Amino acid sequence: RKSTRLNSSHLVISYAVFFFFFFNDTATTEIYTLSLHDALPIYPILDPGAARPRTALPMTEVDVLILGAGAAGLMCAIQAGRRGRRVLVLERAESPGKKILISGGGRCNFTNRNAAPENFLSANPHFAKSALARFTPQHFIALVEAHRIPWHEKTLGQLFCDCSAHDILNLLLAECAAAGVRIQPATRILSVFRTYSSAARFRVETSAGSFAAASLVVATGGLSIRSEERR
Image 1 (cartoon, rainbow, N blue to C red):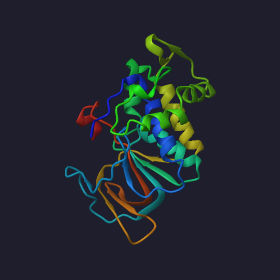
Image 2 (cartoon, helix red, strand yellow):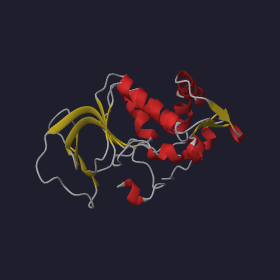
Image 3 (cartoon, one colour):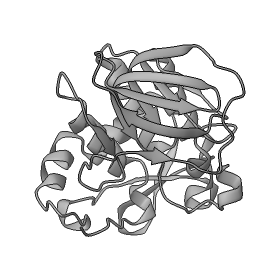
């Protein structure tokens, strides 16, 4: 499969369109990787460097479990929460949205007016067409303006915050809160596997205990932040 590479100006909008499309269905029962690749089932995911909890912790069950509280994971969580799902986001770092805060030189190039299907690479060339049609750059601009975040346009349609990338992160966290989304930072993933004995089809073992969910989304991003900062 081809890997997808996008200009950083698509940071939020490129992920947002995918999750809006993905969670429009009433039920999902596979593991998905969400980095604008095609959805791929993964069996299993293991982190051999993570320390296992010494004592058994209680199992937490939710409708949707999202691994990663970056732009992708948070946008996905918002859409799922708005659809009445019980959503939990697990984040390895001490706080969500680290990559958002360093994007655009600290001002977050949150979308691009000229985002079009031809700007995206995928094994399925038609995917970006439907996704972008359902969540356009204007949709995200409207959300930014609803939160009264001042912004400006640079060359080639790139849009940046006037003040700080913190404005975009605060927007996403506020929308998560409004949708009833829970975010749990400082949680390392130990293993991910599928079960067949209950409605909670996926089980995730972490440094903070066990979690079960009917739908699992892997939105852990790339390696643009040094590995020691991602631990």
